[in-house]
Structure formats: structure tokens, C-alpha cells
Image (cartoon, rainbow, N blue to C red; front, side):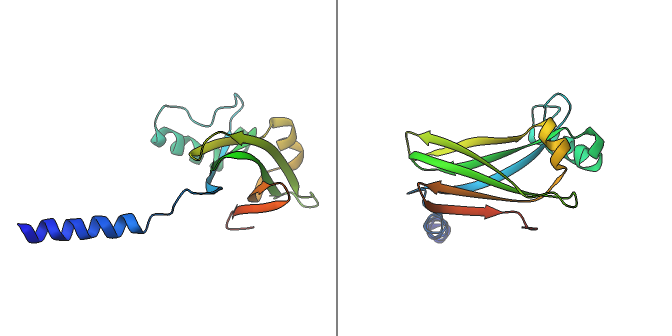
Length: 148
């Protein structure tokens, strides 16, 4: 019985040592969500509802009326979240959206970046994205989609 406790403790310590620290400032993840005519990204309260509805919107582009990028970042102080987009429309220039946000503590924060219905109609379906986090003139972190 002691050997199982020893193995469990060793595995727990090894797992804790491999976790990334949330010290400083950086990006955790970026979630792009298609929006319907009412501005909703889900038709229910669970993640299963959200994923199913996103699948439905992805397969029916005529139902999509916008895109919201949910940017999860950590840190304190004032930062600039920059979203760069490339369109599937031929001849469309890349688009950049920026938002200056501030946070009081080192925990994680969510910042929504919206491509509204009017802009979406002109720009078209985003094909690739890149999110960068800036403090002043210094780039702190970056995440990008597979096609960037």
C-alpha cells in the first residue's frame, strides 16, 4: 500500500513541476466564435451546445453575421491586445484590431475582440489570425492560427 502512495506522490510532484507559471504577462489561449444574426455564439448553456452550434455555423456560412475572438491573457497593468486577420476574399487587405486593457492583478483575464456584421460583410470570412500582446513598444507574447 505504501508503494502506491509513494508512486502517487511522485507523479503529483512531477506533474506540478511541469505546469507553466503565470508570472509576468502573456497569452493563455484565443477562442474564435462565429456569431449568428442575433449575435449569439451558442444556442444553450453547455460547452456541448456551443461546440454543436459553432459546427452548424461553420457549415452554413450564410448564417454567420460576425466573429468574436475571446482572448485569454494573464498579467497586471496596461497592455494592448492586437488581433490581425487575413480574409478568404481575394484582394482583401489584412485587418488589424487593437484594444488597450488594464488589469489589477496577475490572474487571467478575458478580452473580447469583435468583428461586427457590417465589417464581416465587407471583410469576408477570416482565414487566419494572429494575436499579440504588447506593453508599450515591446511585444510580450504571440499566438496564431495554423494557417497564419
